[in-house]
Length: 80
Image (cartoon, rainbow, N blue to C red; front, side, top):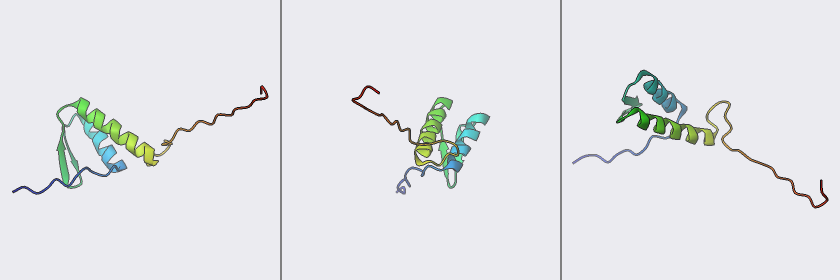
């Protein structure tokens, strides 16, 4: 009988940097805390890193990156 999967890792900056380092070195096996993940291809790793980046950016966890883009539109009926 196998134990249930502990679920996905919560997004963290350390996990993002670990994944980026693995991509840079060409490693396919990445160790996060107490879990080991084996990726099938570099493309799969890049997709995971991009997804993690977007999650962290939305939370405002990446320094210098604002997670929310807002536009303010002004409407007038006086021709300005």
